[in-house]
Image (cartoon, rainbow, N blue to C red):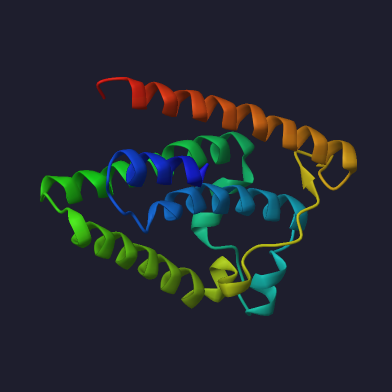
Length: 169
């Protein structure tokens, strides 16, 4: 998925972007929050306990809901990317400066996520998922289903990218 974005921005758009992975990572992190809350319910996630966090941070609470998580991981990164892009392109930032700004954004997000170890999992991230909506995701059958779903969605993304490249857009 990230590679499709790189091909569109760098290959077809001619812009070296060093930060598009942030928006992909935001969606992945939101899903990880949901999975970790499901795996550790009703207690705090293990990395929060190790970091002496006494209560679940308020911004984690909505991720107890699968519906909210799905909406957030689709809408949140898209809105963030659009806002960032609008501000950058409105100022007509281009060339090497575009790469520098996107790299600075990537570094800022890295420092924030690692610096807030107790609330984000820090450099280790969020790990040890076992279930998705109560279903075991570690079984071979589940892994096959997840792989097939990812393949179909990637095919749809490739089709949209193909349409974008062939259109006047």
